[in-house]
Image 1 (cartoon, protein in one colour):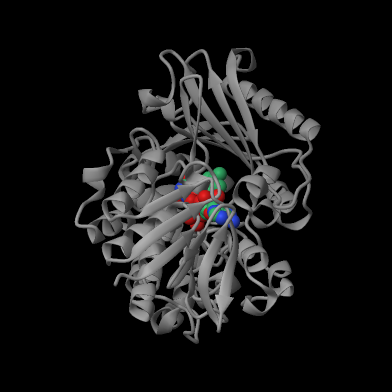
Image 2 (cartoon, rainbow, N blue to C red; image 1 turned 90 degrees about the horizontal axis):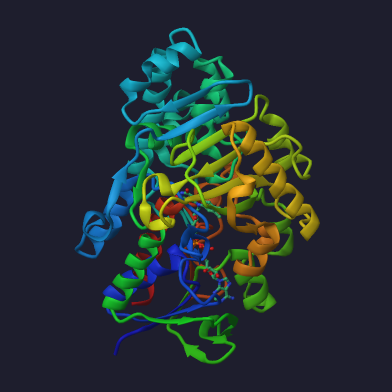
Length: 490
Ligand SMILES: Cc1cc2nc3c(=O)[nH]c(=O)nc-3n(C[C@H](O)[C@H](O)[C@H](O)COP(=O)(O)OP(=O)(O)OC[C@H]3O[C@@H](n4cnc5c(N)ncnc54)[C@H](O)[C@@H]3O)c2cc1C
């Protein structure tokens, strides 16, 4: 008789794990509170526009390749991937606009212009970042850290000093490069893993290699195509989906989860896989004695930022921007302070603008432009209507200044998504957009456990356990969780 798994949440982590368990012959049901799959990577459609609501950078294609290969297929079969060139455009607050190109050699002149010998210094830095990346793939990313004493494995500790593990990413960059603009190019990716470059362990400089060496990709049709591909793989394996069915409780007996109770049904289970935010699962779905962590644990975590997001449809095309655009304030530390140290709406802020309609005609009507603005803000920030509307105007006004042309009078669709929406839509702790930040003590064995300490057949998947935040990491985590479930409960 096949074993029954209930997956709580149809984010990328839940979908990817469900499809793998289905492939192993499990009878899988996914219960999802929202009416559609994808979680943070879901879509919003309005007036002919298709907005990816969360992620937009398809990085580390090899992680997706490996996942699809587990199903005997490939990313190339399931997705129409294009490699972006330029990778992104930077608008610098102190003046200057520059494109970072896909081929490193094409950036040499730019890097030399930003700093004397900038190209060779960047090459030295990237050699280190590349080594970190290779080391992490060999020893770290695909390893399940639950219960393993020691942080990063023998190799990494042995090489730690040389790789700059014990300083910050900023320290590592600043050792080679003094120019603030070039530093920003090499450090901004830390925000992808929910961190401040001055606080993120130097080890994560590998993110720079991921972006600059391995390329920035885009699946035509949008990130939602990944979600659809995973749902398709699941359906092929007989996975059942119950959308609009929030889990209300994980019922336990004798230290095991016996069923997941939703608004409408109960689903008996031989294993439960929680993809919903860890804090929500522990505090809202489990009784006190079944929780692995106490309240104090959560209040002491370093949360990644929340996000102020603005989805905008324009009735015109825009010159002066590319697919991915970054505006960096000259002094971006004040913004990081407002996110991590003294939570407040930032006065002066760096932000990201995605314009997928530059690459993909499917995401906007003819002659229109699809824009996504993201400003990192502090988790738990108060965001009443007036405040967030005013902030949206401020962002658009700044953007008009940046590109030197009218935007606001061409807006036909506009929607704000801010901390309170992260809580309402995904049950996130304090509205965090990216979950737990990747500080040293929230890495590897220090991340929340993949398997509950108290409930023998309850597992976690998604961005909370190792390896953590970001789509590629979540795909890797899905493999680790599915393997564990199959070996321990199969
Ligand atoms: C704005 C933004 C931009 C990002 N940009 C990038 C990027 O460019 N590139 C990249 O690689 N990564 C990016 N990320 C990170 C990436 O999107 C996430 O790491 C990943 O999508 C998380 O997937 P998950 O499955 O862990 O969680 P989620 O997507 O949050 O899935 C959890 C699911 O559980 C559901 N749920 C919650 N409570 C319940 C309940 N009680 N019952 C049933 N279901 C429940 C939720 O509705 C949700 O669908 C971004 C994230 C955000 C928010």
